[in-house]
Amino acid sequence: MKARWDIFCSVVDNYGDIGVTWRLARQLVVEHRCEVRLWVDDLRAFERMCPEIDVHLDQQWQEGVEVRHWPAQWHDTPSADVVIAAFACQLPADYMEAMATRERTPLWMNLDYLSAEDWVVGCHRLPSVKFKGVQKYFFFPGFRPGTGGLLREGGLLEQRQAFQQDGAAQHQFLQSMGIVPVSGARLMSLFAYENAGLASWLDVLATDGRATHLLVPEGRILGDVQRWLGVEGLAVGDIHQRAALTVQVLPFVRQEQYDRLLWCCDFNAVRGEDSFVRAQWAGRPLLWHIYRQDEDIHLDKLDAFLTLYTAALSPAAKVAVVTLWQAWNADGDMTQAWKMLMEHWPEVHHHAQTWCLEQGLQADLATALVQFYESWI
Image: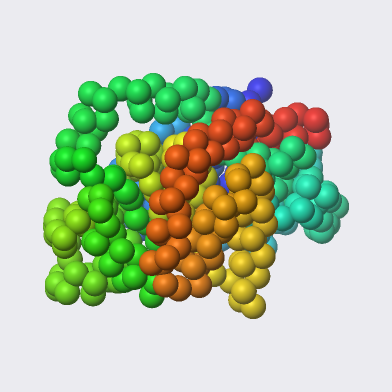
């Protein structure tokens, strides 16, 4: 009999939360034959990456996943065999009561935020609180052995490698997105939160000796791009050139399309959690805009990842990567930081490929969750 899974997602970061849970839900259905209900409190945010979503329906099926609207007023619903509270969201009180009265106690997990901090290994799969006899467990995605790993569909890296070696496939995909790459230009993508440091970065790209074609999907950074360009009403499809820099605005697209966009680019600036992981699977140099948290605790997470990610780089290349990432996440001046990175481009480019392959040796997150459930029962 198939295990039934309930995944609860409270949308906080617009797309990062739903992006992770939507990928996870589909992978559990397709690769592990689980029955999955995905509870989402903001269907409009979900609709951006899955246009087939009907925001007026409380229950619908998309790609084998039962998608349920998580209402403010909860309706009595029996609990599943496995219950995942994504990113420490608080489950409905009545649902927790249903878990406690279930004949067989469900496995209850808090799927936590991704982190490279040392303490994660020690806390992964540890018991947390109890509710009327129902034990909750911590489950941490991560980059090290002893964590839950990263979301990675079966065959993803092989698919990515084949795509990156197929110039015709890349050309066809870019054409379908309305992208005609500037000849000889560096192709880059930009998906980020608002950032005062963007203007200095665009300045240095515009005066670079090599042309850059910058692809900007709709998002929060668009206002900063618009101000730098000195235009009003920047919209999807717009293309503006300033010296060596061409800026093109793209629509918000499905996850599979975004993956391929990352695969096509030479450099990817990403934000949050979902796009951060997907940029690593692209095997290309990247820049992460981490989600800001109170008391700057996000900077500890940033530094922990940088320590891990740059460990195999030469001292000079390590300094270049760290300087760029820290400047970007401090809204700082990007001029010298970008020039430093370019001085070490061959090494940084090779390292991105190596890092991707090393991370691919670990069990993926969906498989790790299923294995934990199977060992638990």
